Image (cartoon, rainbow, N blue to C red; front, side):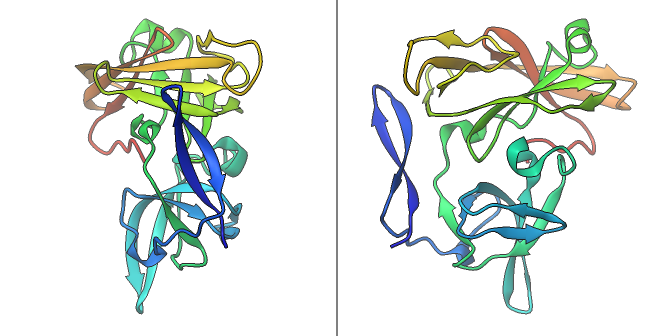
Length: 240
C-alpha cells in the first residue's frame, strides 16, 4: 500500500506522522485552493518537484480531456524551488499516480511572504527588511532582503502546529532555532524545543503608495511579538 500523511493530536498540537494506508482521494477531482502531495517526481519548466512534496493547487484547467493543475511555487520551500522560481507557477498534468489530495493544515491560512514592519514604507519595514514564509511542504523560512532582492533564507522544519480560533494565533514548533524571529524555547531536547507564535491582529491599514502607484491595503500580523504585514493593491498577487 502507498503512504499518505496523517495527523495525530497530542498535547494540544498536531504532529505530522506517516501511515501505510492508501489515500482514496483522486487527483482528477482537485480544485483550485486545495493541497496535494506528489506521488512521484514532477518535472516542469526546468525544475523538479521531488516525490512526497506537498504543494498548493492555484488553478485547474483541461486540455483534450486531461486535467491540468497549476502549482504556486511561492508556497514551496527554498529547499525545493530555490530563488530562481520564487513568485512563479508551473502547470502539469494531474493524474492519480502523480498527486494525492492532502488535508488543509491550519498554517496554510497564513499569508505567503509576511513582511517585517508595520505597513508598507514605514521605517520599520525599511530598516530591517525580511520576509517570513510558511511553506506548503512544512518549513518555516526567514528571507533577508539585500539590495532589494531576496537571498537564501534561514529555515527549520515544522514538527508540530496548532491554531487557536479564539485568539487567532498559530503555534508552530521546531526542533531547532530559526534565525531572524523570536521563538520561545519550551524544551531542552526533542522535536518540539522551539515555538513560534503568529497572530492575526485583525487590523487593516490603507496607505497611499508612490512606489506602488495607488492605495495599498495592509493586513497586520504579529510574529514572535514583532509587527509583520502583507499587502494587496491593484495587480498585486498574494497568498499563492
